[in-house]
Length: 132
Image (cartoon, rainbow, N blue to C red):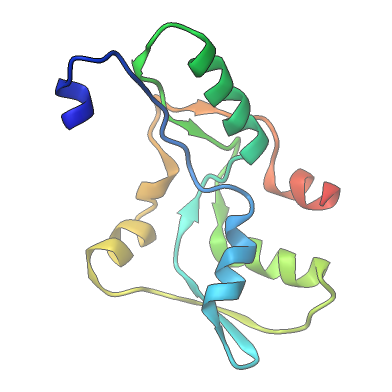
């Protein structure tokens, strides 16, 4: 709010979770041999595509609130985590859990996906994982 109401012109880009979010979830959600994954339908985006958009915005005139940037398709976080585990050669089980509170409810409802006005990147999670 302070930026929006300040004297300087600005640009702001909100982006969905990066593809790397699945591996971060494994690191943070490991409980012994299992991985606990928050229930979260998301629309993950390539970090490279976000970086390219940030550069484009930085090199242009201040744009204010730019359209959100999300990935090309919906994914379930638990499916992404399982795919990363398989790619790592791991047979660890991953379980989807509903987190309590407002943040957990927002995640489970898919509010982290952006809305219909969001721009969509082109690199899918499965394409990214195959390249990684």
